[in-house]
Length: 458
Picture 1 (spheres, rainbow, N blue to C red):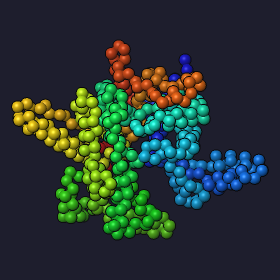
Picture 2: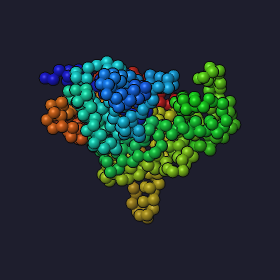
Picture 3: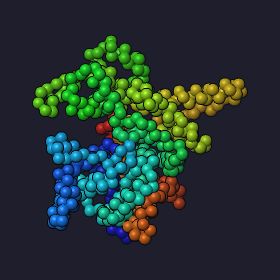
Picture 4: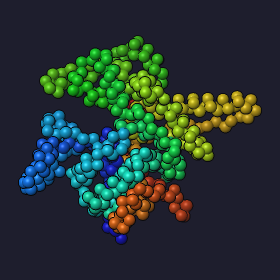
């Protein structure tokens, strides 16, 4: 028996904005860190200069220091502000890894400095965007097996894990649409029996970062006295603290105009350079920020299709026998779906689109045939902020996980091409028992979490 299977697997969900790190069996990730690497350019430049000379010792010393002197996450961000010699690198953009050297350094710090574990003693579950090319999986496999010498690796598609995150009971639902709104990418992905319907995936160019930029733009245009170097951070905090989804944008404008003292909030901060205090008003941007998902034309003229329409087109392009099940289980994932009443607004707008289509079909048939109504249900749960990581934690806690992983021996025999495909867990055991029911300790912890997460308040 492989001794690594007796230890909990390491689960790492690398997102564009933040990465979630932890061990299988936990309800929450141990660490949530920004996906950013700060590299000391002075050593990098010194190494480049030394390679032109014939001094081998100078080359070796500069190269080693260039490899070792880097930081990740919040430490990288703070160091880049205080020192001009550190340059920031964002290895993941729009859900795809673009800088593999930086990504390898990021994983190195995650494993050794944050999780503080020996990668040779744990199986690993990593996540990927639904549009990731197979070549990227090979790169991931090479780094994990060659650099970190992991005994086993499973690369999971994020929407499948987000569906798994909805397991608050023993009920197994592996058919549904995952609406994953992250910091750098928004995907609408239909999943049928655990398999992604690749031809129906929709991706839209509006994400959490765009909400932040829109709030920053609104505050700048209104003339709020926010220091320029601090404006993006203030907009980000305003988004997470004060923003909510309204049911009618015109009514919301009227409510703010009639009772500004009730709805306008005050933001107070200190200028980073001088330390002087400043304050600004938080008004319309409280509801206009999340509104970019439902009326994107207020933010961009390049993309004007509302999110409910994108979800409807996604389901309509899926196989006809799966559509009712997909409408019935629309699962939210990602921090930018945590706005107050976001799921209610999404369900209402989508229900209008579906009901209008059903009514039009009845009219077209002359009212002779009564169409069966379509149930539309948008699922919101307490941990959708890190739903993908939690789904990975659940799946990596089951005995089937270790059987589905690619092992070091398989990699050595067949090469990195084995990572191009990953087996989808069977929906049921051979004896008919459900395979995806989470362990009892996870269910108990999840019930506890409901007291701490209130989805009706931001």
